[in-house]
Image (cartoon, rainbow, N blue to C red; front, side):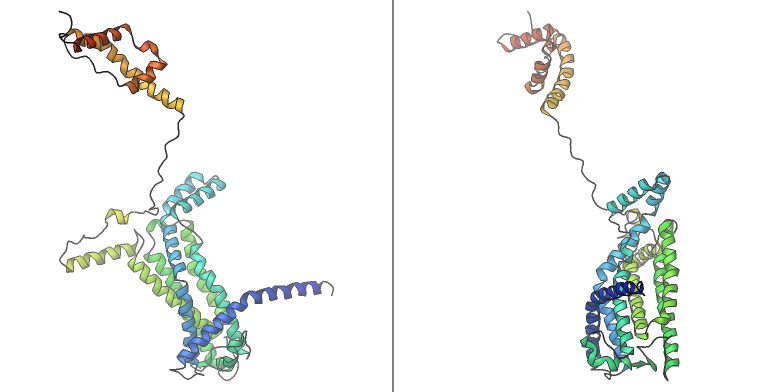
Length: 398
């Protein structure tokens, strides 16, 4: 008995923390439901099951609209993960023996391409608390209870609201009363629709918007697991969900499927069947408009797999000390002056113009460092050049 009391106290504490966290969501979900119900009551009877069912659909649309930015990130992340498969395979071959190094290179690749492997799960994770809040609101309504004072005037209406003779607050396993058979039939139909739409959404992503090389590897295996695991999970769990929650997930899946279809059709990943279909539509449109078939098509550039479109980092020159710069300036001047010193006497003796004097900036550094560079022949060449500039100097000795 002494051991049970601390355990119960700990469990009560966890429940209190959970309720404190979920209470704002209970209020938000209740407020959205009541708002949509008031609007739809202008068309339907306020106690009609369709008014409440469509209110749940309206709640779903509001939530999914708020999650559109996360959905866009999810699509981009999924696409980048698919297109990165060839590079990831190369890294696995190169660093397969060193798990730590492989992980570092993977994270570096994700950072360079702006890819977050966890973005694909964000919409589902953020919907889970909302789903749980709606579940609790409907579950309490089936017992005539509420989580917030907003639902107090409407709890009786929600508790007995029916569609096709089934109360939307009841579940398949806990169906009771005269309409329990209708509850089970409607629940089974909604479970099948919910599971089918989720499966079709994942299958659409894999078949139409994945390049062939991305259908193999670790990411592809994860996609295949999600293709079957999530529908099976919701198929089994659906028998415990109230009909109102099944309506929420069915509408949410239909929204996701339509949203994904639009994105894949308008902006598919390069090298995928959806990308080929987009180019075929563009060619057909060009031919109908009397234009060349390939006008406006990117060709190889659009079809190439390019995940990192950011400009390459410019490499900054290394800073050199003053003595290093002087040494670098002295070395080429010394090398260039040597052949000129040897050739200048020959040029003077043949009556040709002597070589031009090297600029002072180039010779000064060399003269200070190597005073022996000016040989006797060089001084003679300088004297002959000065004599030529005098009147009557002509072309050397007479």
